[in-house]
Length: 524
Image 1 (cartoon, helix red, strand yellow):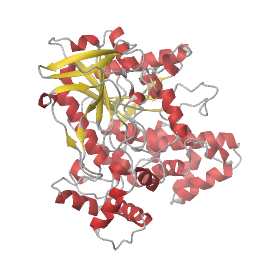
Image 2 (cartoon, rainbow, N blue to C red; image 1 turned 180 degrees about the vertical axis):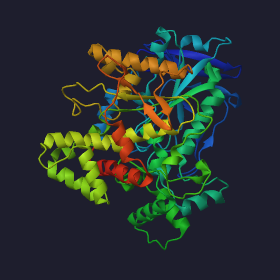
Image 3 (cartoon, one colour; image 1 turned 90 degrees about the vertical axis):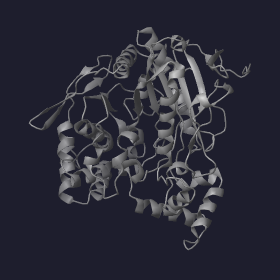
């Protein structure tokens, strides 16, 4: 019998007899939740190759050690982000294994002890696709499901939680005609977004195998971050992707006249450090992929945010001060400089003036007030609009929320704000939200979010946020804040709707948010 000698602190081994000739060793941790970590769902033979699924566990034999997290994908190294990762960790510590583009295809499953009992009742499943601008993060300790699953058990709503890792940065989203043609010579599909293919394989693995851990494969809820909600509107076209590929080839000291085979081989043999450095910044833009969306690229429109008819209940939301996370550089600008940035970004002078007027900008404003309005404008530009647009175009019932609980940590650079990602603390019930030093307000807000999670996971509508009267959608979002969460009116939603009322205005408005991110540093 396989017995791991390197368990996480406070964990004891648990053995699951999946089939007569297959056992999986997991652990039971301090939360009394069973963890099966680092389960492999796919593999690749070389860089830029399409991942190949490992298939159903029924094809495996022997013993699988699932007691520790597997590697995360090789990614941008940011010491400041590593410190944030520590604060975002739950019961389990981050993986100490080296980052790997080849071994990151792993799923983590967290299940109540009773879920492993052989009975007819299969539990609903919640799957988290981790965030990080498609170039950072992991589905390991930054998506630790122990506390959330424990809370569900304690409140009579047991469910199974799963997360996974996938390729990031240029390892997943570098693409070009050369790479597509090379893939097809190997009888691959030629995906332009390998990372999304990875995610789909992970979801397929979960659906195919989750019943072995007590989960209902026909009752799966998927949670994802903003980059996935707004992905279609964030996609670049294949022509721009080709230009970026050519740029990377040039930076590898290769002339563009070099053969396609030589270009690909040079990038395949570049070190991980070189590949990360080529990206140049911790964010990527995915390319529109006809293999996923079934139509040729003809320019992106708001209508393409319309969700599929098979989509059931939907919850979408954002934090009140999303763009505060990128505001440290902007804090150094005065009012005149902020106004100049806006006017130089918007190509239509009349529309630029309308935006400035709508947000109350004037040269007489105090610098601090101008910064606050810029954070609001940037938040509306990239984060408020996509959830509202998704809700408007969704065929099924939609629940919309805004997370207003603010960061009260006196040492935090985000003190006084509810920045991008801050709702994750409450979602995962991290110590900062529910621990012994957390405020009563933070705990109540986390409990309110947990009720939302339970409802949607159990296929119930948390609340009705959108009603349409005379073809005009009316939103009444849930607001999570100050321990007094409930449906409250949110100022400014009509303003966002007006400034994005047609495709041209929408595109110019969102460009401001892209400017905010492109000229900012997350950690100063």
